Length: 124
Ligand SMILES: CC(=O)N1C(=O)N[C@@H]2[C@H](CCCCC(=O)O)SC[C@@H]21
Image (cartoon, rainbow, N blue to C red; front, side):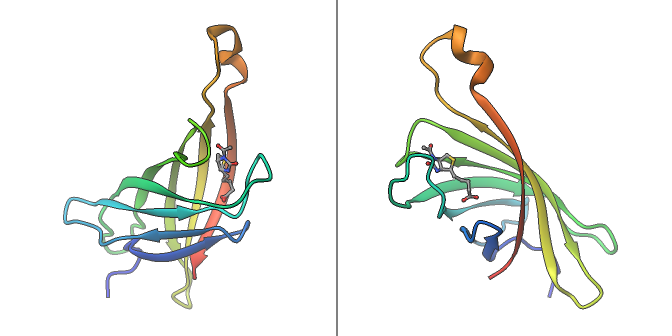
């Protein structure tokens, strides 16, 4: 099978789950992100995600990006970008960095509206 096609179920260090549907021929995909982490201590929800990945060619591991719209939590949005790597044993790892943009009430608060972080996903 083609390694590093993003479709399937992934888990990250926070034990959150990401389910990605079939990746189309042009690399587009969509899916759901079930986070276990809430900033407000509320319950976890599933949020929609959409993205695109480069098609894997021999020896070049594909890069990708996707956005998660945290619509059940707040008006925040996260943009993830990363690459898929396969180790010698065939284990796939997605290493990502993300920008989380919270909706703030005024331009004066814009300076504090974006967080950045890293997230690593492996097959669930
Ligand atoms: C209040 C709010 O918007 N959110 C909240 O309380 N939890 C989600 C996200 C948590 C994702 C980071 C951890 C993971 O990978 O699951 S940050 C934005 C959204």
